[in-house]
Image (tube, rainbow, N blue to C red; front, side, top):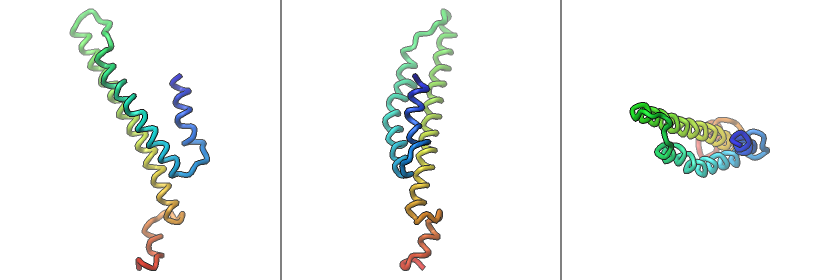
Length: 114
């Protein structure tokens, strides 16, 4: 189920024939919609997961490790979303500069900027 959801999420970004601006907007919207779910899984469920250890010291340590793993995964996912968003946003901005790849070079050709 996770694999199918991941493929469904990233398919339009990787194989879609949309513009870079549309892909940046899609990734940003996906990040905003996935953030509450990610935070619930990382923070709220960490407190409600019962420990299987019978000794309280080991149970508390395992709960802290589990919570740290959940928070680490949430941060990693946020970094991936931001990196892909930044990539497509920069591509979109380059396309808007006349496809030259350098905004300053495009501005130099302007009659307003010498």
